[in-house]
Length: 217
Ligand SMILES: [Zn+2]
Image (tube, rainbow, N blue to C red; front, side, top):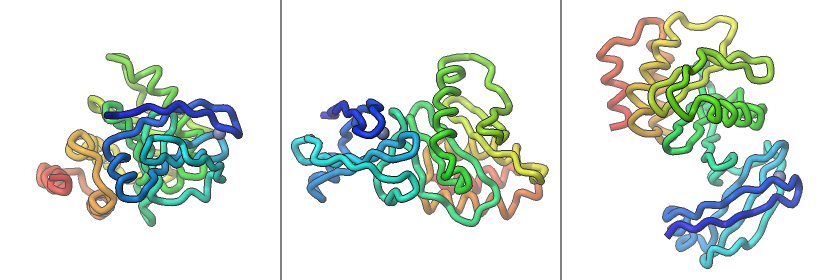
């Protein structure tokens, strides 16, 4: 019994649609309301939904003051932003079939997130529709990102001045063994990124693939 609620931002006029999921209904049953946020150019529109699926309140928040635990969206993509701190290997994952953009493993991207999401949505329009060759790189606001793809999973990783030699192989493995199966939760992702960072000096072996896969079994 999914429900759609169209909304219009009182600050910038952008129109979005809230899709109420069973998970949201469960939250409403427990907490009385469910809160969702929409990422706009320089702010977030927060919306509270009550048990009758009515909009109970709308708030404009500065982008950087967003609370953790709020379900965030950009257009109709769910965006994960709960940053994994202290990592060197950074990347953003787009799961086209689940309509999720996972920015948790890219803490340095958060301040520029709106522009990155805008570029990714443009990328989806061009390359998400079919067997069109996916470019190896995209540029976003002067930063070059390497692109890795398998099926419905795309990984964008900002190129840094000194890159580990085997980074691209590890990111392909991450595509093939982890994200193709599921989007890891925060704890799983933290373990996965730590494992890759500890082992990135060698090429990923079959045993490494098994270990990574086991994190999401
Ligand atoms: Zn707005």
